[in-house]
Image (cartoon, rainbow, N blue to C red):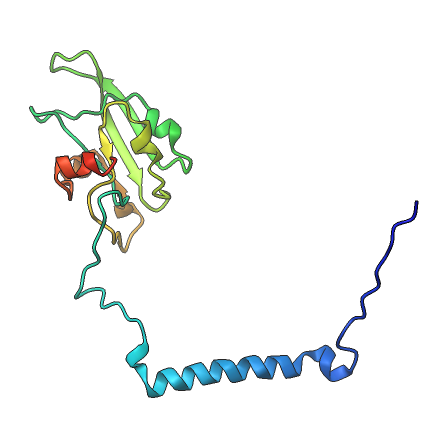
Length: 174
């Protein structure tokens, strides 16, 4: 049984067609046309005025991390390492210690998140059995001039407030 082979004639046999100069010039003409149109009449350009007009952030948007606390002010995290284990980018570092406040759980002595390594997937929030870590801060612009300041620790995670009301957060699927 022989396979039927269909021979297709290849285009671009002349030297000029093989260099694609005509097609390159057509593309450059389209680009130049867009450039001149936008230069002469920029009223149709879509521009975001970012620093002056802040974007609307939905409730389910994943922003920078925060840790939640109990009503008495103690951290909800029990250092179970579920968020650290579930993190695909390995940006969460936890050290556990013993509690001295009468509870039976462990306590994180160190809880660091490297924001430069984080891919903001939200797997840490989904994995947490205590609802201790959340990404509902509304902080969408995380910038710094040094790598060390992009690693946020336990104190900064606890001090960061949530951007949404608790009822609104629960209703949004958090």
